[in-house]
Amino acid sequence: MYDITKLVSKKVFEKLIKLLPTPKQQRRGRKRIGKKALLNGILQVLVNGVVWRKVTYCGCGYASCWRYFQELQRRGKLKLI
Image (cartoon, rainbow, N blue to C red; front, side, top):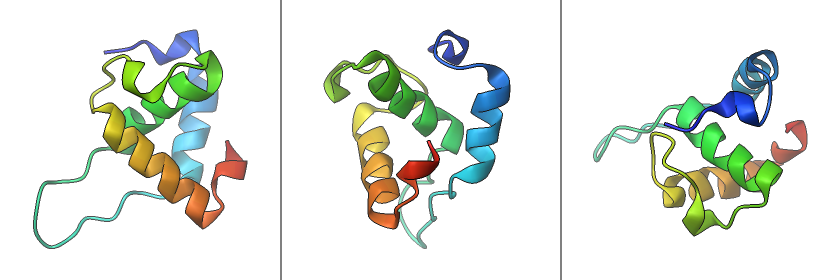
């Protein structure tokens, strides 16, 4: 798993986790991935400028991170980051 402390401090990372909304679980299908893994992938893209397909494995796939990122943009929560 990717070490997030290379990008931001643990204190900042925990603060971001509290600010961002939790992905909703639907009645059927797979369980949702935790916010830590999703935020880890998103920060790799935002801080390092990595392409979505080149995101280092962070507990989930790049597509899940991208979908959560799109949801944050739609809700207007991306300004928090």
